[in-house]
Image (cartoon, rainbow, N blue to C red; front, side, top):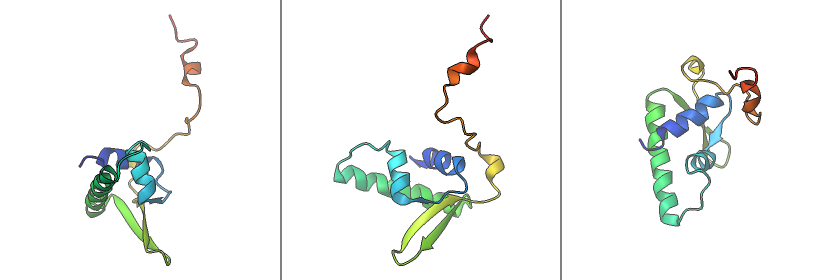
Length: 102
């Protein structure tokens, strides 16, 4: 599974959020501009990884509304197995190094 670690990282970091396939695809490809052939290949790899995670009971798939689009989220109760985002995004982590220098 090529993109399984990236998908686990994304969904596990935000267990309450539901992600659409396009959002997951954008995350795993680092939002790079890809050719149509590369996009199709990446979409297929993401779908395979999601199917594996759904079958392994790690991810929940929800179909919604009239659009028939699916959204994916981390299964509740598995939060202890994944390190949840601690809210340090955007902070300057160098501030914690002060005072520890010898």
